[in-house]
Image 1 (tube, rainbow, N blue to C red):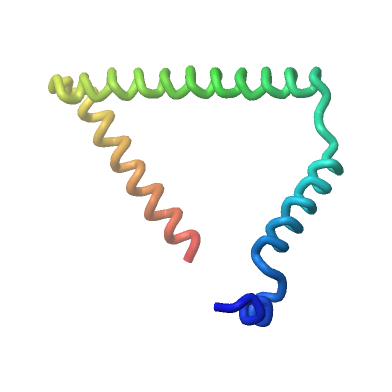
Image 2: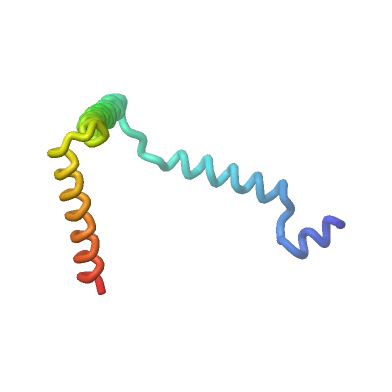
Length: 102
């Protein structure tokens, strides 16, 4: 395909569009207000603290579920009754929430 056909179809050529994109991107990055070092460190600390807290919370939930499942698989009658009640409660909650949306 000739250059004139490409330009007639898409306007500028690929190289010209790429140059314009890079120029506009550099100009946009120049207008960005970057955080100070202190702000970046503080926000990084917040992200790490929240991540650690959520990881600990999920580990606790995992431990509780593993303990509970071990009791159910070990034929602990009380654990089986609690599991059945939780399952029934979950189904009832789901049915009621579906009915409420309709």
